Length: 152
Image (spheres, rainbow, N blue to C red):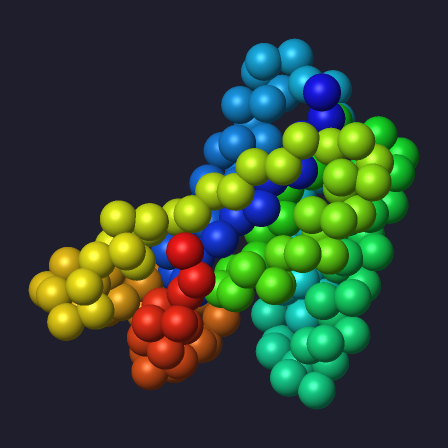
């Protein structure tokens, strides 16, 4: 059965790395077609990430359409590599994939840390490490806010 995988987590958590690992694993298991789709792709200019906040809504719609196109064309494994902080952020992807007969899987990267008490050292350390690892210039306070509002 074809599958849509929804990556979830904060910037710097490792979603893109895990998405690429999942794609490689799918191919090694005999899956013939895999697509990784990220709204971040639309922020790329000449190989550089350039965040365009005014275009974010449009870029999300473009990514949703791209994912639907892959599902409609029968790509066996489609991976959505976005933060998906709120459950509503995923709903269009879920609805479209289900209309194409896809199985849905959510992968929460950093789940243990995100589910921990926001006052705990584990949570704080995780935010600090994600802020250092992320590559898109997202300020630490924004990453912290995203983590605190992450819907389980």
